[in-house]
Length: 63
View 1 (cartoon, rainbow, N blue to C red):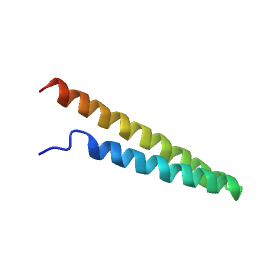
View 2 (cartoon, rainbow, N blue to C red):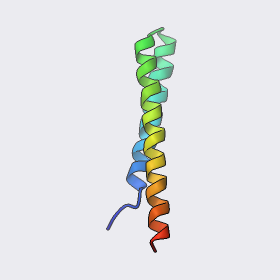
View 3 (cartoon, rainbow, N blue to C red):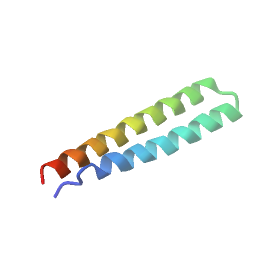
View 4 (cartoon, helix red, strand yellow):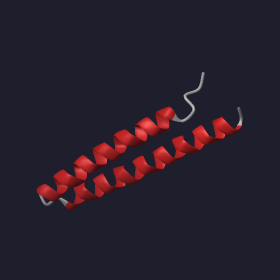
C-alpha cells in the first residue's frame, strides 16, 4: 500500500520546522551561515510538501 504523498508532506513539515529553528538560532547568534542553511531547509520543506500534495491529487484522480 502506498502512502499517497503523506510521507513527502511529513518530511516537508519536519524540514520546515528544522529550517525555521536554524534560521532563528542563526539570527539570534548572528550566524549568517546557519540562517542560510535554515532558509534552504524551509524551501526544501515547502517543495516536499508540494510534491506530497501533487501525489495525493494524482492518486485521487486515478480512483
